[in-house]
Image 1 (cartoon, rainbow, N blue to C red):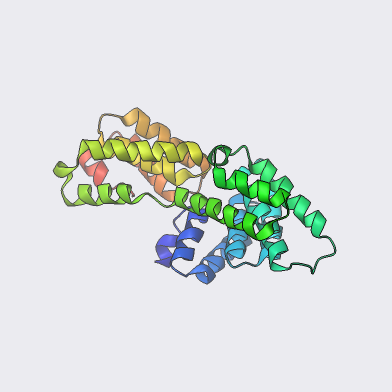
Image 2 (cartoon, one colour; image 1 turned 30 degrees about the vertical axis):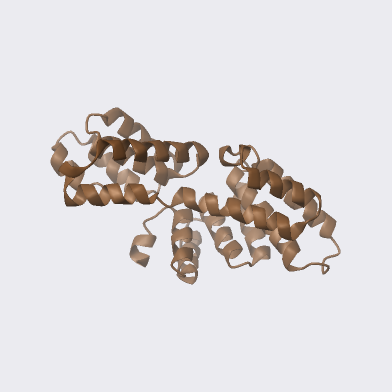
Length: 259
C-alpha cells in the first residue's frame, strides 16, 4: 500500500493514510520528501495536515504558516490554519494568556478561506464562523469538522467512479453511458468546489477519454490541468503522455492509463 501511497498527490496520500490508520508512515514519506524539496508548499501543507489529524496543533500551525510563506493565496491552507488555531484553543481552554489573540487568528484565517467555492454556500462553515465570533469554541469546531470532512471527500474519488472503472476493466461493452454522465456530473461539481485538487481533473480526463472515446480535447484539457496543478502528479503525467502519443492505437492506449 505504501508504495502506491507515494505515487499519489501529497494531500490525498495523507487522507488515505489517515483512513487506513497509517499516518505515521505517511509522515515519514512527507518528511523524506521535504528533505530534498523544502520549497514545496504542498509538502508543507500535507505535513501540517498530518499534525492537524494527530491533534498536534502547534506543529500543524507552523507547517501551514510555512506553506503560506511560499504562497499566501491558498484558501484551503487558510482554512486548515484557522481550524488549527481553533483546535489549539479548545485543547487548552484557560491555559493561554493570549486566548483573544489566538481567537482573532482563527477568525482571520477562516475569513481568508471564505472565498473558496466549497465554502461560499456552506451552512456549516457559516454557522461555525458565527459560533466562533460568539466564542462558542466547541460548537464552532464541531461545525468546522464537518467542513474538513467535505474537504477530504473532495480528494477521494466518489464510489460511483470506482464502480465505473471496475465495470470497464471487467467488460467495457457493459458500461452504461447514463452512469458515465452521472460520474462526469459529480466530478465536474467537485472540480468547481475543489479547484486545487489535481486528482479530480485526472478522473475527468479518464472519463472523457475512456468512456466517451471521441472527446480527446476535453480529456487533454483536464489532464493538462491536473499536471499544471501538481507537476509531480505522476498518474496524470503518464496519462497525458499516452494521450499525446500518436503512435499508439486507442485500445492499447486505454489499457495503460492510470486510474
